[in-house]
Length: 392
Image (cartoon, rainbow, N blue to C red; front, side):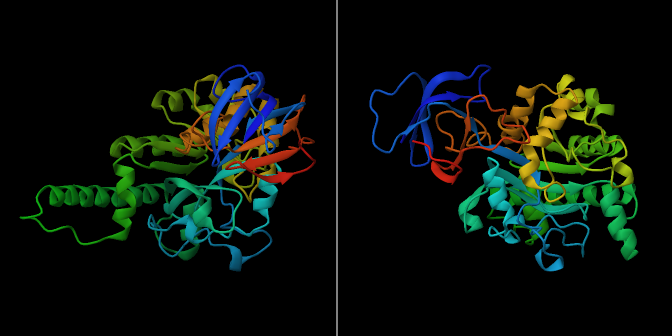
């Protein structure tokens, strides 16, 4: 299939292709070129009058694991019976038939990182998924990493149980203990693999197994934190254990943007358009993303769905533009930056050869971040999964 006569925002270069075409084969982009293809087949799409963008990516949500309109029965986000649960896998709790997947697709959001919650010091495994499908296994893009949480959420949950941790010190100590045990487990495993004749493998431990990819830097450490001091703690722990660190939320990031930038830690900023619903969010400011970006922090923007419904991801980015963020930077925060931060930029996030054909079609002249905007069609893996009006 070819899509031709399109204005293409590839998001991997500064300028759009004013009149170009995309060639797709088996759901993968084979070529992105200027001009018109030499041959046009019956099933090819004439995109005259349309602008193409990569599908948007929400880099932090609880999509499908907190179901729409359902209380306890549909909430599988937090296994709050143990404050350290790296072995929990979010895909085992996601319901792809939740209607919020449809709402995501209809607003051009083709992928998301769905995450366990922040009740525990360590909540479990974050997974990147597509937003269309009937079986989560077929929607899976990759495992992104492990979710940790600092600050108010674990404190409140376990204070209510009269159990540890009820302080920031205890939260950090639990994380440090878990990572320390996993480091020793990894060392024992590597020693056994190097000398199987003389050594026995360590006794199987599911928590340590889950953390090994983190210590090998094959997966990322995602730290939920709003306050500036908690962000510094996340950076401190990551340096101690040589983790590939990502900050989720970063509400007070503007207070220490230079420190975050110097540490080389990206931030998934959001929710942006919510209220200051708890003490650690009292510093919420729509200028946050712009200030961090100006200091050189690599940035994505998220909804934290269902805190903000996922279909409002674009206007979350537009709100950051109102706070001073450049529009192209905002688009990058929903496409290539988001993909890079969640470790999936090899397959999604831009329109280029070798990547999945996840595309949005807009009428020319449309601002895709605007509240009133709607894609006329959305494609995931080369298949049209939403169509508002006929495209040729």
